[in-house]
Image 1 (tube, helix red, strand yellow):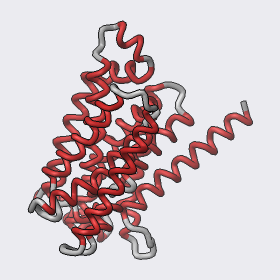
Image 2 (cartoon, rainbow, N blue to C red; image 1 turned 180 degrees about the vertical axis):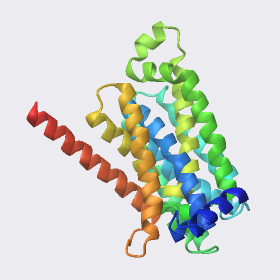
Image 3 (cartoon, rainbow, N blue to C red; image 1 turned 180 degrees about the horizontal axis):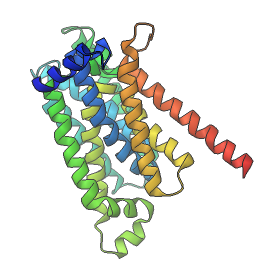
Image 4 (cartoon, rainbow, N blue to C red; image 1 turned 30 degrees about the vertical axis):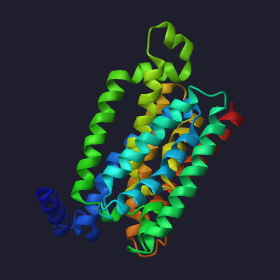
Amino acid sequence: MTTLYQWFQSAVDHGWLPEMFSYEFLINALFASLMIGPMLGLLGTLVVVKRLAFLSEAVGHSVLTGVSMGILLGEPVTAPWISLFTFSILFSLLLQWIKGRSTIPYDALIGVFLSFALALGAALLLYVAKHVNAHLIEQVMFGSILVSGVDDLILLAVISVAVVFLAVRFGNQAYLVAISPDVAHSQRINTRLHDYGFVILIALITVAAVKIIGAVLVGALLLIPAASARLVARDLKQMLTLSVLIATTSSVFGVLIPMYEEWPVSAGPAITLFACGWFVLCLLFRQFNAKTA
């Protein structure tokens, strides 16, 4: 990373880049956004196709409980990764397990888990906040990408490589399971294994993105780019490409634009607002095409 920092500093000295690129924290945030954007855009298409927008919200709010438990167990306040990953993955697996053994509609079941995660997480976090930095609540709920360190980048890189590998190896099967489970089953694809793998990926990417976007907003960036892409895409491949593009540009702009003093919004909310802007543009484009068709 030292070499990268030096390269950016050299570019600033030569006038090729603005002064803000001389700050290491901004470079870390920029690389983090370049990794988290494609991951959320990629997985978001599955979320939209499966109609599981609520799932990402439930898992995102389970992070509140994971953070609090990690701090109570003595993990570092800024990186309680063991509890975060453990609780979120167990939370997702339990949700999927109950789904397969219950007649309750999946959206209602997710709503129950969402309420539980939010209530327990808020209670524990408020208790923990009395004994640690009061800004912890804001960081967990709304993100703090500008404090991303090298360790966070390494974590994101590992998860990114895993997601890309799984997408290349099992992507077609995953979309077939999402679109037509019966056909997938007839092709001898283990649909149950794909469902469990899907919720685990949701948990992993959600936890990885929480420090950047926040528990409240991570579900939005998982959903909005894919929903925007679906408005204008002609097929699944185009939807996937547009979703990744929208999520990535939203992440990058959400990091860079708030660095200007006149922009009053922090990075986490800014990323989501840019994604919402893309949604409005896609919606207008769709309406315009419908009128001219």
